[in-house]
Length: 79
Image 1 (cartoon, rainbow, N blue to C red):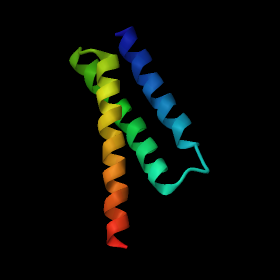
Image 2: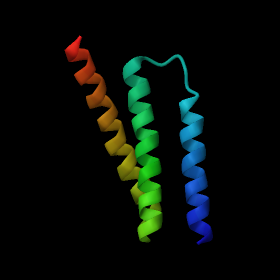
Image 3: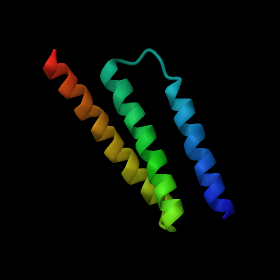
């Protein structure tokens, strides 16, 4: 139970810390935001289900980064 609270706190802190990044291009911001959100969701999901927390963070971060990239590319094509 204690480990879950620590994992959730770290995920939220990481997300807030990464959201303060400025000076990045639009694509980089979307990818970084996607990575942070994906990692947070991965941590929370695996903490709730009792899985490997670091695995959930890694997989969520990779999926979120890819989603951010795809979102950026789709927006660029529509311009």
